Image (cartoon, one colour):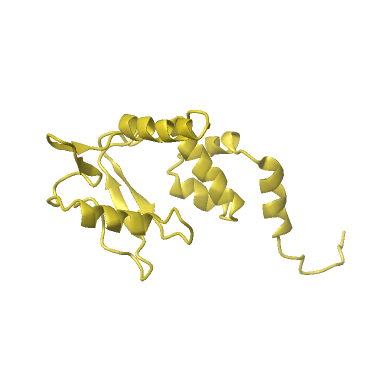
Length: 156
C-alpha cells in the first residue's frame, strides 16, 4: 500500500503509483483516484479493502488471501471474475481495453473536458478520440455548453 499517496484533498482523492504500465513500462506512472458521487465510489472501496485485508505496507495494493497464500490481483484474474459475473447476468464478455474506453466515454458524457480526459487517461496522443463512443451525445453536450458570444453583432 506504499504506492498509495495520502489524501490530496478533503474528499480523499489520492494518487496511486503503478510500477509498470503499458506505455511507461518499468518507469511506472502515477494515476489519480478521485472521489465519485455514485455507487462505484473508489475511495470508499479502497478504504474497505484496506480495512478487510490488513497486509503490510510493502504488499501490492490489491493483494488478497487465498486458502493457501497471499495473491496479487492480476488483470487476467480481474477480467475473469468480471466476465463470470456478467455472464451470469446475460451480458457479453468484455476486455480490459473496454474499461479504458468506457471510462473515457463516461467522463466525456459527464462533461469533463477532453483535455482533462486525455491527461487523466495518460493518453500520449489524440488517438483516444478515435475510440469515443456515443459521439451523437458527446458532440452536442460540449457544443451546447459553449458560452454565448461576447457580442451579437459580427463585424467583417
